[in-house]
Amino acid sequence: MNDRDALEDLIDQVVVLPNASGPVSLNRKIALLGFVLEQLKHERGSDSEEVSFEEYLQSEIKVSGCKLRISAPPVVRDIGSGKSPIQLQAPLLLFLLLNHQERYQVLEIIKNFTEQLGEQLTFVDFKKTKTGVTRCFTNTRFAAKVLREYGLLKFTRDQAFKTWELSLAGFLVAASILQQRASQKRPWYVLGSAREGSFDLLPEIRDACRRITTYKEFVANLAAICKPDSDIFKSFEPALKEAFHLLQGYWAILTDQTKSQKERREASLDRIKRLDALGDEFFRELSHCIQINDLLSRTLQTENTSTWS
Image (cartoon, rainbow, N blue to C red):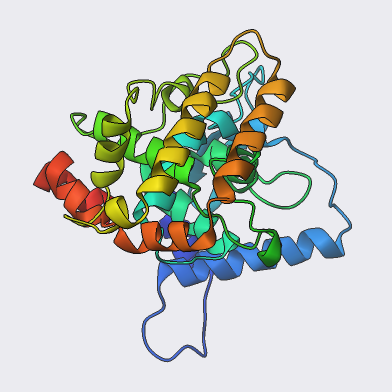
């Protein structure tokens, strides 16, 4: 918004709160003005889209005295639809890894996640859809849906999907991505790439654990996100060996170009269900021993850690 300062001054003058005790913030005036306009739209029965979101964004807005001049663009161009669900997959996995003990509800996850992305999201991402919610809200849900269908998020049916939790595969992929991004100045970034062929998972996710080819590497990758000398690697060794065996097949499925999208999803879930059969105690102990702060201190520079906290 080029004339933002002038517009803020205009709103500050136009909106008056005579009964307010003390100074009134501009944010409060803008919020109240927003409600006034929404109510006016409703009472006038103008719920239909008189002006498209895209036309508004490409209009020239200027303040002239006490008037707000809005000049429509000569041609309304396609400005895209913001960050797509597939672009949000890796950042969402990282967010759930770093906040795995918070037990946020889905709405809290989406709110905190989009706030964490901060300036990477533009106003286009906050366009309201016909359902009344913003694009980034809907796209985050779609990102989680795909991750869940591939078993990277747990099927929490008992909670009616009220929260999103990483599965064992999700923990491993998120930890691998975090370590691979450690050398970047801004590890918390959204990739510019979109869908690739028939794959509906980012290459970054599909390739995250290709380097884990031995049981020793598998344990080392898990150890990177756990407290030092965790007993889980001894007390649950049989379960871990079975998990490694199942995950080897899982990684192969994710990258199999000969399978259709549907076939990859079905085969992935079959492996994940067998992983889940290893028992709740194993996953509960794994979650308890995970210590992200140690991983951050080992992989991220001090100047970047505040971005993740």
